[in-house]
Amino acid sequence: TPAGNLVEGMAWLQNAYTRYFNTRHGLWGHVFGGRYKSVLVDPDGGYQRQLIDYIHLNPARAGLSATGRGGVLSYPHSSLAAGYALPPSRRPPWLDAASGFWLADFPDTTAGRRRYVERLDRIAAGEEAERAGWVEVEGQTLQSTMRRGWYWGSQAFREKVAKLLPSGKTASNASYRSSPLGRDEAMVRAEGVTMQVVGELGLACDSSGRPIFGHGDPRRGAAAWFVWRVSGASQSWIAERLGLRSAGNVSQQARRFAALPDAELPRELRDWRREKLKFFD
Image 1: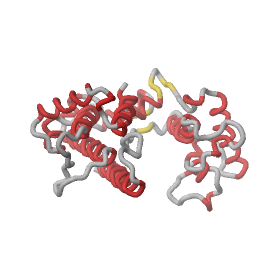
Image 2: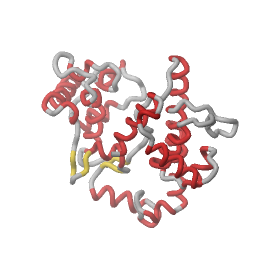
Image 3: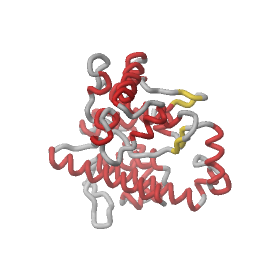
């Protein structure tokens, strides 16, 4: 499916760039904080505008942009500073800023762009920095949706999407997961997770694409642990994909790695596990 191709493509990009970056700089470990994912967004009710705000306020939440002079534009590596704040002739051709301005009800003019940025500055200054751009609707926060959800929108939007799925099942429904489409999407997701962890752990692969582990390499357990927890794939699939002996070995390796004290792990792997646990908890 097009969505599956996109997920596979992004997983490949993350994996390839991580290898390139680590090789060039003599580093080890992950470059990106998490795997690529996508969610369906309700075109009505302001959900798209909320999502664009959330993305533009990422630097503010991370403490990478100032709340005083310069404001949100003080972080140059974003679609705001490098796109929305610029006139159309200076923007990347792939950036559809015009739709973003329309959703926010601002004209794409010098004055309109200035007011758009000032509005984001007010949000960043008026909320706790680590919560800038957070939105909660019916108990569902935008941040939790970005991490674990599959849609951002109203209940009516959810029901509309559900009707398009096999037998009207949602992506979290067991019947949908067991359908051919659900299994295909699960395998795409599992492959993407595997490619991500291979890149993050700096693993080499053999000619068949399986990662290569040395004797006693703790990254074997790390890979089994992460793919098992995140992908939703069966232990048999993970065992085949990672070159482990059996499904039981996947469980054994994953549980052993999860229980290892920090002191028994290399620093890079210890930091990697701590970072992943932030998303699991």
